[in-house]
Amino acid sequence: MKLSNERMANHTFLREMYADSYFPDAVVKQCEDVLVALCHEIEQRKPANLSALYELSHAATEQINALEQAFEEHGSEIETTGREAIADDFARIARAYGFSDADFEELIAPRNW
Image (cartoon, rainbow, N blue to C red; front, side, top):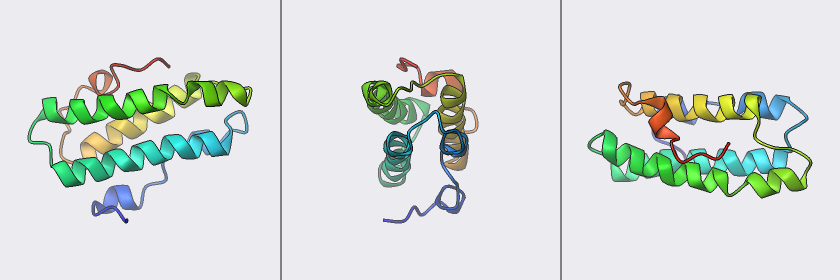
């Protein structure tokens, strides 16, 4: 299902991670799927405030946390480039859906990476 938000529908998620051979594309794709699913959740639930947005973003962050072992199995980890790419996409998602006042650290507060 295509995203209704044009900015996110046309966005290339995790571009920096895909461009770096250190990150296995199959696992990066799983991270991308989490971010796209977050966009779908926002579009369906239409969070009314930051607290509701953070609830959704925290669940997505925990899903990405769960992929850490998959990265390790491929000799990789979510290190600086990965952390920045993922965090940037969470921030981009928040802005695209009208939450420009979101605290970007709070969006990914439960992260292990």
